[in-house]
Image (tube, rainbow, N blue to C red; front, side, top):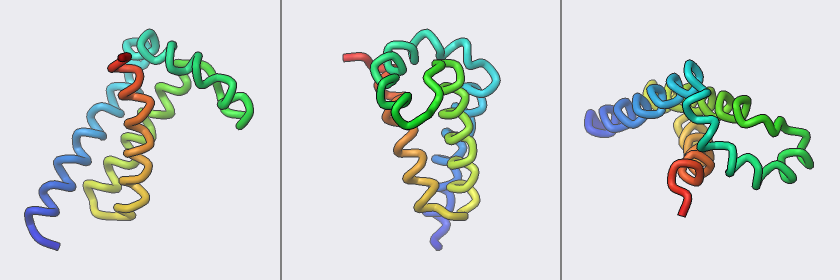
Length: 99
């Protein structure tokens, strides 16, 4: 692997670790923005027997970002980590940028 690719994965992973860590430590800051998204997704979440509480979902999203970011930054399981991170970005983007 080239040094540029290693540096890029490390830096990208660090962004996800940082934002995920903040979501885990202070979920109350994100719950208000996440609530409209979780309310729209609640029927699908209930059908899949998943929690619908916005705070729990913010914490789960943060945990996925921390784990995926660490895996990406260390170069382990990079494709599954990238897939999980891409999936975690969708609800975060919907909550942060309601068009």
